[in-house]
Length: 121
Image 1 (cartoon, rainbow, N blue to C red):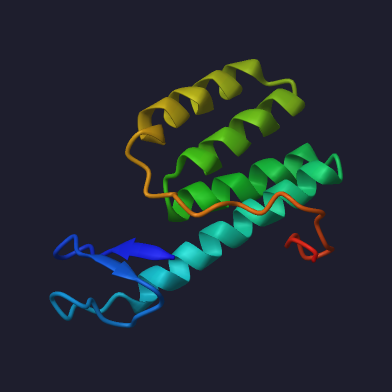
Image 2 (image 1 turned 90 degrees about the vertical axis):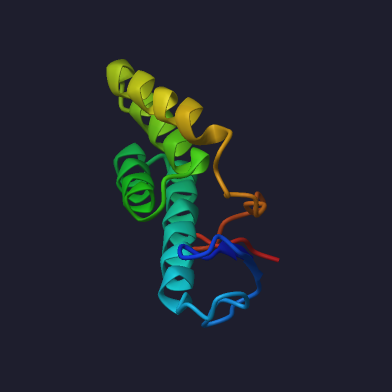
């Protein structure tokens, strides 16, 4: 994974506790990144189970931690599944807003999902 330091914007690669450029503490930001990704995986698992309400809840928790195109897209899809087209439209606007500027570049696994929502294999 990659993470831009919030202090100096240096791109740090790998899970480092301090910024390689300015020495700023970034360990907590890695924890937030991981938690946001885990909620995205849980949302995907909820979709696989046909549970739109849980998919929406997990995508919203992910969005609260980090505004990414993926979390907005999952929220939009969940809203469609729930029959709330107005909310889906609002989430698609958020998707458009963050889509080009998102640092959400890591591939999301698309294989079979386990009980915990992570990829098997």
